[in-house]
Length: 242
Ligand SMILES: [Zn+2]
Image 1 (cartoon, rainbow, N blue to C red):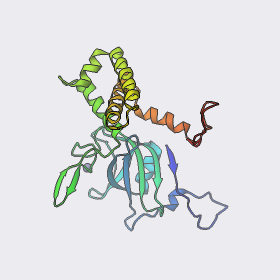
Image 2: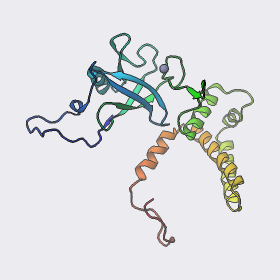
Image 3: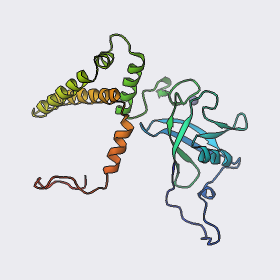
Image 4: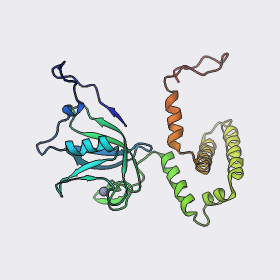
């Protein structure tokens, strides 16, 4: 777990005692601080709850999200009874230290209603309507493919691909990649848009078939930021920052 702390202005430097970032937190008059939990891989916001100092300490010690229940007046570990625990991978403080962000890997649904996120309702004028997935599109696609793989619904194209096996999926990835190349030679982008969507879909199915989570692909990309350019020698001069 890493702790990310925004640039904090040390109050008065104290050479006798190392500054503890917990001391920078501004708990409210009841000793609580709001905590937003966000799924790290997809960016989806899962829930809002409160922590006191003890809950925060338990989170830091165990790596599992702990909160303080205002209604029960007690410390609780998320998923203690349901098993839907939150693995806290990073803790962030906001600019003025009066709110926290847990970046988590959520097991099962985060909400007690068994919805993935507590924010599953959207306000539409004066009505509430079901909210769509709050994470990024590829994570959403990965989730749908995972569900199809686990349940293998009949008539689903994903089920068909997974049951045909790796060679069939590889053939499709190859075909779709070629179709992207051909479509990109057209003036209009309509075909490219459609072929790019096909390629991404088949790539996500391939990753699922090989058991490689998208999160690991993101991690790989992340290690490349800020590295020296890998543009081969002799390439035309382009923006070398990326
Ligand atoms: Zn909820």
